[in-house]
Image (cartoon, one colour):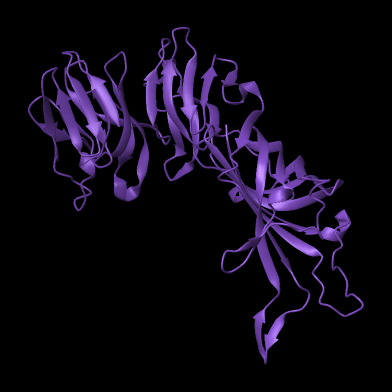
Length: 411
């Protein structure tokens, strides 16, 4: 979780099982560095988040459990008003030697936020927590993290004005709000760089540049091996044995995707197209036999490929919800979307709309998965085989066909 080099050149590693110290020749490991004052039944003091060295040579360590200070001989738990600081993700020493840290203190009262320590007294600066804390060249303090420790789903990049840092209520400006903000750094030119769950941003004092969305739409190629299209049709009448329904007359099969792509912009699905090979359409039987020719249904020689092209995508609640540029991995409303596009079968093109769910599986530049279900009336594409009772009264096939789609695409 953390790597730090002290003034003597010693490398310190914060891990999930304690602290490791490397002097260039050998490692020395510290497990259970201090007895927990709060979470006594678990080993969260070994879950190390951050390590820094102050001007006096002491190491300050933030953990999932208690925070503590190491003077080279012993570990001392950080306490304020008799209680430890818990779940400290970030610690920083400013130019005056004041320590800044974010965590929970007086945990039974859930008083989390940003604190400063002047060598003798802790002062709570803000309710805002911090995953990262830096001081820029002008003396301002910057943080990324939750606006309110009681609700970690709302986070922000915040700036504390240098002139008011040591007052009772420093002036804080919220530069950007969202759901997940992590790393934080000042560049040589004074610009502030920060990261969230999906990308990286730069703030130059006036404008925020979003480097993920800076290039506009991103093309994701459909993985034809992982993507699946399943169709399901049925007879109008079921099959019975006495009073027991033994079959609803349904049949299922699959069809191969030839190629396709999805267009993603600002975590929106905005377009895309897919082609399927009509020669591969199959009906699957219980014994896994397949029948892959449907001459009565499709003229596969004349129309070997069918296509679907997206023309519009709306988010949940009929498109009334706007997707915020907030660093979230999933789109809002649990990924619910409504897809409209042109479906071409047997040389006939018609507009269709169907519900779907979209999820970013591995972050924004990883894998996108779209699951949707489309119900069509096949007769609208002149697929009329056994759509009505014939003169002999043979059982007809339902006009409605359900198409299940799992589309996996990669950037």
